[in-house]
Image 1 (cartoon, rainbow, N blue to C red):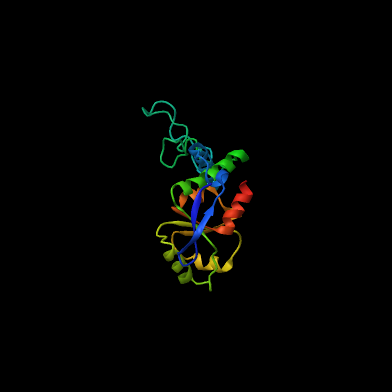
Image 2 (cartoon, helix red, strand yellow):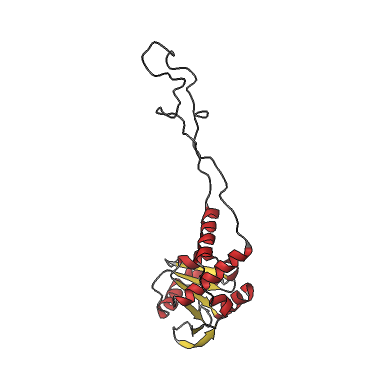
Length: 207
């Protein structure tokens, strides 16, 4: 079982915590990480792009000049894709890009993402996170004590309005809960900060 240091809000180590091997200690599968990341990015696409084909562009109803005798190329409409103000060839239309992957692949990707943070020594487990007041300076002080100077994902077991309000204005810091945790966020942030209770809950969910 991987052992990591346990910290308090002052940044002092108060011991160690053992994390489950089958959640935080598996071999990282880069292929499933790629598949799930690609799926999440596709699912975030709005798919609202749209352009007009030659059939939809206004105008072009009359033949610009007669078919023969002018010496010019034959043309049937001024809204041909070859012309200025013409339609678009294979114009993009609104569509749904979302798709899903099997549950086993998504679970394996989550375990791989969590294990990668342990292997990179990018995980910080906190004994608890209770702030005296919902102030940005209080959260900034905690991060400074933990030597967090990169983009960080902060994971809590559940809703905590005090921490949420204190963390939301800090650039590069994102707050997540165990039930909103996803592979893209884990990989996108350099440091992974999680409370002891949240870590146990993650182990329980993905066991």
